[in-house]
Image (cartoon, rainbow, N blue to C red; front, side):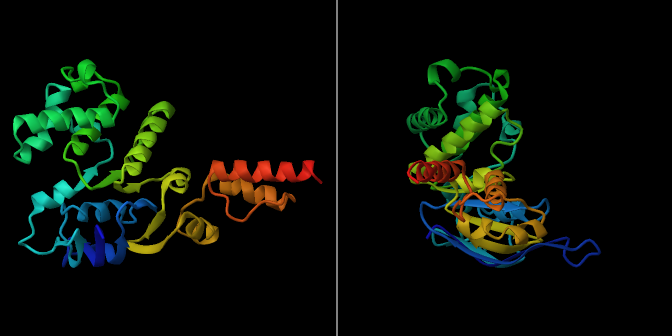
Length: 286
């Protein structure tokens, strides 16, 4: 089991007039190879949560266990934790700083103490994973690239660490439709390679499409967790938390109210397409 949270609690500005509890006794278990979608309103605790998973923040109470390593234990090797869990922040391209793409991607592996041959191999592998041609991009300045290419360089820098678990905070934020679809296709491919993925997103459509399970954060609590069907079937509860359901779910509900005989669980475009084709096929044979 790669990740487990036990009564995870975090309080900012403890024992002061500005005290605020960002995480309140959060518990969950994540299995190898799962794709977890994390949703919640602004300020719900999503970012605080993911920063605990690789030790950037220390819990006020409780703990996080990563591949058997207790992050609350002072003897835990945090370099190994951060090798195990790769964290891609929102707008990661703002953290690019080296003079070439190759040097920027190599920064993490160098900090692991790898030799030059292994670093070079890591850089090439990471560039391949984000579909950046080594010969074309390695010696370019990252600041000369498009926004989507910059983000792929930043993500490659995390992948070059070869993490077992990849956490992405709004990986498509600010991208145009092409860049957004491209990044999501890369995320899907990484998951197919066997990586455990955690993705924070405001897009219910993306979460419904990719996630095996969804965590719903609300005022620091893990309010709900379950499959997309289990979560998005609770539309009224989600709306009470300031959240929405996938657009196709709203459409399916409206069509059902107008007399179309559609299945209950429709949360992705693929599910809608199958339902409509089945409905039309049934009418043709009626």
